[in-house]
Image (cartoon, rainbow, N blue to C red; front, side, top):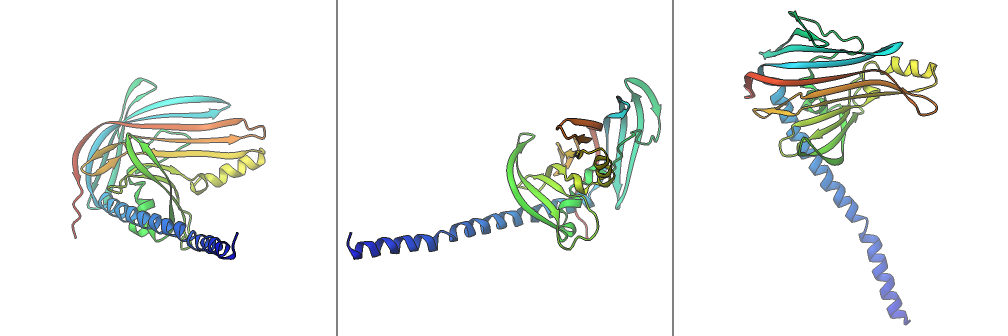
Length: 265
């Protein structure tokens, strides 16, 4: 092999080494631009959701299983009403059956033992609104299909400016309009995680809390809850799973009276 040929091959190799790092950087810039566009759309979606005038009813079916020596399950069916007008929000429940037996309890509380929740509809606002985007960090971690719709999966984590506890997690977002199809909450950011972790440490186990919400119904550009699930469990040293409590909530038979999303200044 002549020296000129060898020098030519070395030059090609050096050019390849110099050029190759540019490709990942270019891809990273494209990914960041894509993420920024999605976050901007999601901020707009959350603004519409947060300011919308709403009035609707639906059935809320709650199945809670809790452990008192043995697992026990109760099924509550509520006639649920949600009203939001002039930034004032009201949730109202009428309990219409317990374990299949009809009842009629007006203005009932949520009769669950282990879990409490409220305003599930506004879950996306605490993760993707413009104000919260200042305090959280985001990255695209994949793509998925949910409810027969393509979604970009974004992970939200506490950012450097966040000084108080705040729930974060993974979010399934429609890329075309920034609306949210599903949220899976990070167990370590949930309010009761510390007490669960302390119990697990005493019993030489690992805490495992699963919590998610799905938004399967669309009306006037907004998405409404279709189901949610929470489970409090522990994984033992032999990798066995001990379920302490779980709750399924299904929202169905919606009737809408007001869904006004126009933003007024």
